[in-house]
Length: 104
Image (tube, rainbow, N blue to C red):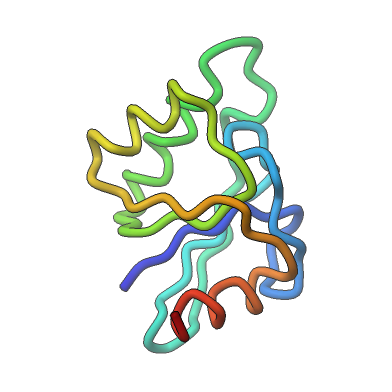
């Protein structure tokens, strides 16, 4: 499974970023191998529409699940259209978040 995690940096030891649309990075993690791809969020500096643009970036990377702090309503709607399961209220490091998700 491909899991997208909002992150403050490009490594598994980075903290989970709390704001989906304006996070610095998405880490796209393969939950079976724990290999990951850091993706800079092109929407982070947008004046408006950051959430929907960020949702498209996550979808383009074929993520099935998103782990983050909070997601605004516009982004939530777009993520739902892409059939991406959204888990909010996530904190800690990216690695901890993925492991916690995998373990239920």
